Image 1 (spheres, rainbow, N blue to C red):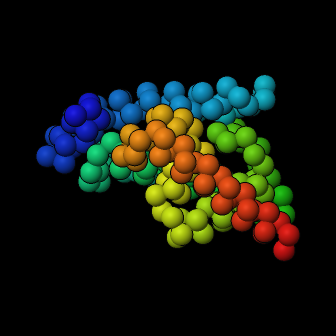
Image 2 (image 1 turned 180 degrees about the vertical axis):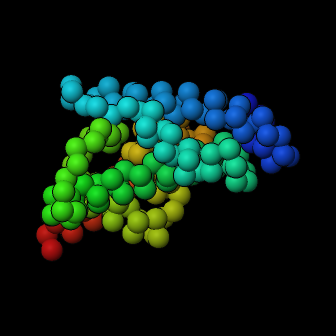
Image 3 (image 1 turned 45 degrees about the vertical axis):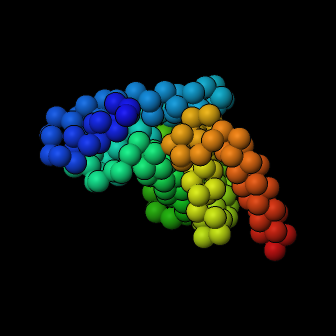
Length: 187
């Protein structure tokens, strides 16, 4: 049993300190993943991977963590939270470009972990939502890989599958998503 799983069990049992310890444990891991993802961004980006991790933690319940079945369940929820944060941000930026809001306030910008523009992110999100209806397990793999930045080797145990299975799922998911995005672009 991993440290994260033990802490999740302690949180479920009502141990208030366990939630703080859980945050410290997963924060380091999520922060490292976000930092690795940001290392591939162009110079001058102001994103602090910390911002994405903190927002995801807040959306997951912060110190009042819900019932997590295991480490995989937690990281799947974290991937979904990060995806939603990135999509919400892209929608806000897109709305600003179209004139929403009378005055544009220049605040510290937080760059996304995924190096795509907002239109591409929104298109991917739309196709990914359709894919989740067709094949929810493979859609979770996409979220973990794309939005959290996990490798196939890291994502496989979270999903409870072997690495070869993760590779097959990833190849299938990429092909499915690409085909659907091409179809949508042709409309």
